Length: 87
Image (cartoon, rainbow, N blue to C red):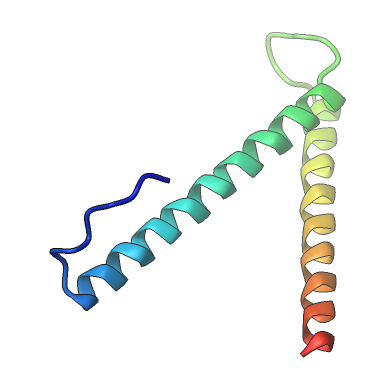
């Protein structure tokens, strides 16, 4: 990330700027994750291009994304517990 000219900002403004940049980074990471899930699940579930998705396509996509979310939550919880044990 490019350095921002912060020498003219007071401490409160610097803190707000840092918070804003961190929030935008989290938002970008979330959006990237959504795109990854979409790509993987689309390739897995959509085997033919049709004018409309059928019920099996919808079910497959829903299950695929839910499994990704479940595994992500499980992984984050596990990492959080491991970090807690190290303290």
